[in-house]
Every structure is written in structure tokens, then in C-alpha cells.
Image 1 (cartoon, rainbow, N blue to C red):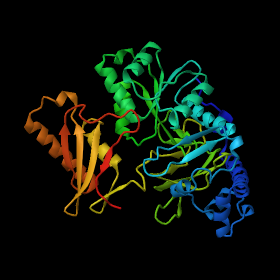
Image 2 (image 1 turned 90 degrees about the vertical axis):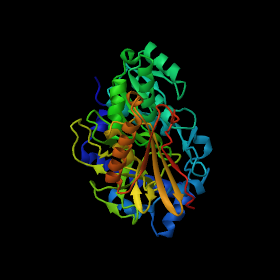
Image 3 (image 1 turned 45 degrees about the horizontal axis):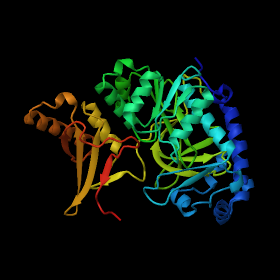
Image 4 (image 1 turned 180 degrees about the vertical axis):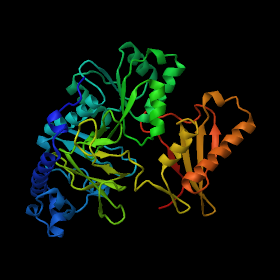
Length: 433
């Protein structure tokens, strides 16, 4: 079994990798300064010239790029190549405002697919595997990225896209898929559906590559148990390329960042101060090899920790933790910072379903926090007293975790709408703006 897709890069000694980053960063900064009015203007405002950036130690001299910049410059303001040299766009959903559109040259796509291929091989994939890609295709980066990575590895690729769960299970069993790529919430739903259809014993899955939304270790175990596979995390953003910015190896102890293509920093989300590895803060990325749509010091708003200790898998690239929440969609409820992942951890640790919904509202100028969670199928026959006791138990567990009270409501199995893409976990009814 292959361990690495590009071993000479993935196991490159740290000093060589640092030298490569220094060289590529200096070249990239000059490239965006010469080819993009937006970046040139931001650097000129601070009196920074390309020759001031020689190594990664100089990175902090450069200004941050934020999502509002991408929206304000929509559609062409951050491009560094003419349209005649671009071959594709991908786009965010635009649910929180104007869409972010990212442009790609053919080289950009080739390098992106290489990153996804690294993730598939790290999960044990090779040319003998059948890779079922259930991420959405089209403008969403999930499907195209893993599809391309699967082709590069040489897997038989099933480009299923999302939805039509019955057909997903049919192809999964008939063609004996061994690798599954989708969101973790859809993986959990596929596992639930396979069990209900009596197909669990017919699954040949060995690995799952799940990303595009936050998920906990408890949810990982739930998916692994239902689908009989090993679940690997993958991270990416449309703004940077898509999935494959980082990925888990067999150790499942953080996602290796493809540092030959991306420089990662952790900053204090309030002050912007760069923090040392090992401290929790906001993740910032600089793309080193993107041609059409390179980003310099892009604030992802994801909260995580970087780990530079050696990994037993042999990869030398640093690892990032699972995102622990976001600095911009963190819920502030009655003055307390609340991350949905905290609530999910409590629910799963107490034997509850991963299907839940958090509802925040404001009544008489006071924030309310309600959590609806489906009861496990074997608890449907419990008495009212038993259900009430379980709700009280969860209320106490959540209060211990969050520091505030949440109203817990146990609801019937399958009563919360399933998602075939990103799960809608939070409904915030407050009019805060």
C-alpha cells in the first residue's frame, strides 16, 4: 500500500521545506504586487515593497486579507491572470452576502488535484480502490476537488454528487466502493440509512474523507461504527482552492497542511498578533503557488491550533487541529461564548443522536438557547418520565460545559430535516444587526 502520493515533497526535511517556502513567498508577493491593483494599493499604503519580503519571517509585515475584501472586489478585483488564461471558476454559496468567486488556471487545478490526491493516498487509497464522491459538484469545490484527486491516484471514481441516498447505497454496494468522500453529516445519514435498509454487512468501505463542516471526535466514532470505515478529516476553503489544503494521515492526530502550497499562521483574532505554534487562535493562510486568484494572509476565521511536533507517519508538514469553532460565527449568548461543537460533544457523549438543531432567540431582551435533539430509535418507547429525566441530565451536562442553561427538547427520530450537504445546525432568530 502506498503511503505518500508525492513522497519527495510530503517527507521533505523541514529546513528544505522552509527554504522552498521562503523562495515561493518572495516570488508570490512580487507577483501579486505587479499584477493586482488591490494588493499593490494595500502594500503601498503601508509603505511595503516586494523586496521587503524575503523570508516567511517577513510575512507579518503584510496586511491581512478578509472575506469582505473578496466580496468588495467581486468578481475580478483579485485576479492576477487575464481571463484568457483562466479555465474554471468555483464559488461559495453566497448565503451570508455577495458570492466569493475564485478563478483557476489549468496549473491551479493541477496543483489542487495533487493536494486532494495526497489526502486520498494518506487514507490508504490507490489505483485498486473505488472512490465514491458524494460532495456536491458544480460551483461547490468538494466534488470537483476530490474527483480530480481520485483520478490522479487512479481510483475508479463514482462521481455521485450529493442526494438520492437510495441510489448512493445501490452503487456503494453493487460497485463495492472502498472510499467515501462527503460531508460528515451526510456520512452519518448514509450510515443510518444503510442500517435501516439492512445493507450494513454488504458495505466494503475502508476509508472516508469527510470535510466542509465542523465535526467532533464523538461524531467520528459514530460514523466509523455505522459505516465500518476509518474516518479522515480534510480541510479547505473555496477562497484558497477547495478541499486538500490539509488532510489527516493514518494517525488521525491533526491534518497535515500542504506547506509547499500554503503558509499557515495562527493569530489572536482580536489583536492580529501572530501566536506561536501550540496556542489556539485564528487560522491565516497565504497561498504560495496559486496563479489566477492568490490570497495573501487570508483570515479564515477558523479557530484551531498548529502542531509542529514530528508525526509518526513520516510526513514533515505541520498539522492543524480540527477547527474548534469560528471567530465570526461563534454564538455569544447572555455574554457567554458558545460554539456548536461544544454542544455536539455533550450530546454524543451522552449517547444521543448526531441529528440536532440549536435555536437561539431573544425574548424580553434576554437570550434563549434551545437544543432539539432526536432520540435514538431504541429510546422511542421510553416513558414520559424517562424522557424528562434524560432531558434534565442533558441540561445539566450542557450547563457544565457552557456555563449557561440550555433548554433541551428530545424529539422523535427523523423529525429533524436531514441535509445532503452542509447540515443546518444553528438557527439564530435574534435581530442583532
